[in-house]
Image (tube, rainbow, N blue to C red; front, side, top):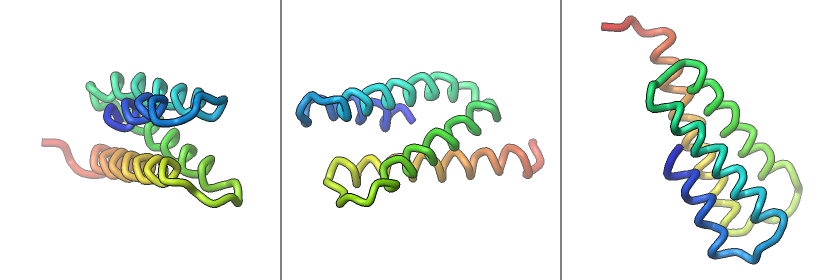
Length: 98
């Protein structure tokens, strides 16, 4: 989550400053706030991280326009975060704790 949030914020230096770039920076700051909550590994934060990442993938793939390199890296990072958080949430919920 932290690396993805920093990546979203760092994309401001590689893109033209526009509304889409500022929304990506806002998305990255949300990722960083969720990453702070993940230090405790609470189930709620894992659920929020999974939902926010899945919504991020959906928002990028929803328009029927060709994806650029930055869009592909963002979809990849959102998807990786969503699958990792969902798998951790599943393990915390269904596997017995030690």
